[in-house]
Length: 112
Image (cartoon, rainbow, N blue to C red; front, top):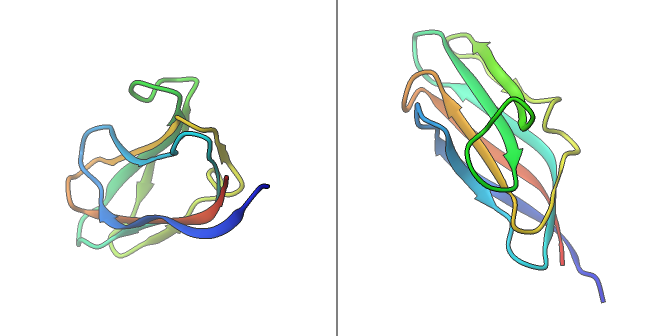
């Protein structure tokens, strides 16, 4: 029997300035992103990058948001990640141009 549950996939976290896993899909589970929000909480502009990988760092073929500028105080709701499916064992990765400048939260569904 399949179970679908609404979930906060990523609780509010501050992004690092290096590529990092922010969500790993458990074995025998699939996740679907409903909404991914990035908020620049500083007084300086920065950038964000994010994507989905089956292992390893973000690359050209796995990056969905590539060095997108985000203004001071701006909240960006990502159309690039909305609706993206993350297979079992895969990861959502993200980083900002400046450490601790961007807060990220992601909600969606988990299907087991």
